[in-house]
Image (spheres, rainbow, N blue to C red):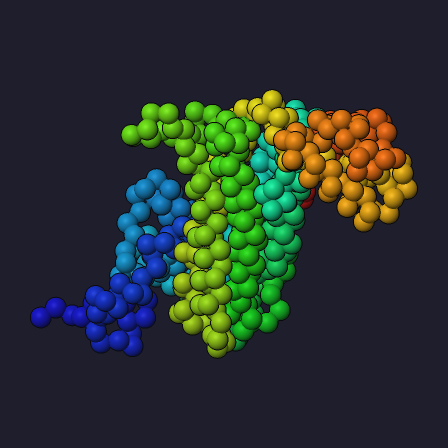
Length: 468
Ligand code: ARG
């Protein structure tokens, strides 16, 4: 009879190995292998610190460091054999280290637990994800700013309730999104400050009796400081929730831009045409150019918001400190980060490559009595009417134009004077969409000169960049 296969790392207390279902539900190696580089970096910092503090010998620390470097190479070259029996990345690495360097490997886990180890690894991973997303978002902003500069004066309909409201410029619309992504980047940077604290050395939950130097490992891993409370250090996942919240908000912005791309590229709007490389065809309708990438960006907000919701529900009600529930933190974090990066990049490609149809934009800009507010403002400015009265007069003029099936500029002065006798021919100057946008010079307004200045300012801010 063969011996039961107990776990090599804690088998001492066990007489039997796990049931196959136990292994299946318990193993996280299928997804947490992505933490390998963070895990190895954390272990190297820990081993070096243990030696510096006289807790393990220099020789053992050197052997551990070399062994870990070998494992890193093995994993990166695809030669490492991951084992579900070894549950997670931490134990896979440690077991391999034991094979490579023998008993000295067993000293690595001195003054450490998988609880502080996994929290450290995930913080390092999230920090890198934030830095990657920051670059991707800056690239998207750059694409939007390019478009804003090119189309600073291109009038288009501005909508509220998806009804023609007032003309704006296409550049202004692009810069609205650039501003949203600026806030998304800022939110990520703000979260990064709280991500960037080291749990390492909190050990299982209570700290350790070994004379460790947590500031040393924190600094070696680029953390700003060690976390102050050992219970908090191993229990906290609000750093992951905050990251997911920032991802979710950013995903809603992308989804709105994607939705507008879908609308704008339809035959009915015809504002833009997506490039071939970001369109798909239909297997049955030869005329089709479908905006699949935009639709998927719109949809992926669902899974990213779901990741936030999912982890929030996992975390609620967990007693301190570590519970295995928290192993469920990784998949939502990985999935949200991957999905968001993909969406941001696909959106940058779509924005860069799409063709903007200025004629269609201009024609649509005038539809729906879009300059009615300009007319009302003229009545206030030139005739001194209270705005509410000007609103009423303009409404009557819109009704008249509608009855004659013309736009406001299509009414004759006589027809207009039938509604308000003091109207003069000068009113026609404000009825064009170009004069409408040109007049919107207030701070943040859509006047083409404003848009050019705003694009230049956004470009300059982008060039200066932000210290990660
Ligand atoms: N795979 C585990 C996780 O992702 C590592 C921590 C395990 N800690 C423990 N006490 N069982 O959370």
